[in-house]
Image (tube, rainbow, N blue to C red; front, side, top):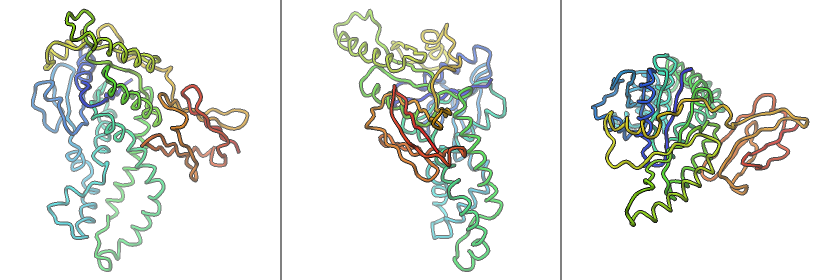
Length: 388
């Protein structure tokens, strides 16, 4: 089965190096592999020491590299929608030179990056796709955007579609506004279908995995724990933790003794939180790790001898279970306290808010006649009971 591994973590923890080591490891196993960067500040070219453009480029046997340019993807795959947006914006007096900057709604860059990855996955050209993502917050925005956008489209698209058909014949003469034509609307309809496919792909626990890269430092550890919790809130599978830049135990320098104690403390904390999944320790190397030789060194010292692409099928996820009272929804939420979880119903949606993040979960049709009768956080799991 083809796999997609997404690597993320706080900025500066070395996630690009770890992702590159996995891509190289996969290629050396004889698997056709692609490593993709969705970070707008691309640095795959730096770590592989080759110039990269907007298209796929081979760096070694079985290993290709791509730094995604979402504007390039949008211009080549969604010309009709781009033109419709540009006409709409241009009709309200925006100068032509600014149309390229305003013809994409916020979040569309992330969406087109994911659609490109989905296309590459569906092509069957690669057995494994390794995704080097932006820092934590941007990655979460990237992964949850398809679900968020499809939720809005499902709520408002039928009304918007009727409005477009009614207003379009008179818009140019009465309102002086250029609205999308039927050809562009067809692209919007196709996008909705693609969003549903994209959601299914990102949350397919047999295909897509999230891997977190961390370091044994207080701020990094705290962000890693929050990242783990938020990924579970949105029902993404996290199945690996990488603790990077670990000092050697036998270092003979008094200056580092306190640092060793600090690292021991945070490594222990991470191992307790992530005890249900594979944990990889990566040493702090004595030199920069660039080029294939540097990447191979990470592979040898941190990944060699372990099945880094094995499926972790026993990990918890979002589940609906029928019981005597009705249905029970269980969502695994590690690293969160009871008072931090806020839950309420809104129409046919269950809304869960933790910190600055909120998820609206459309309820299955079988639960539309049910209501929430109880909700509690028990053993790191949010349990929501539905009864008719």
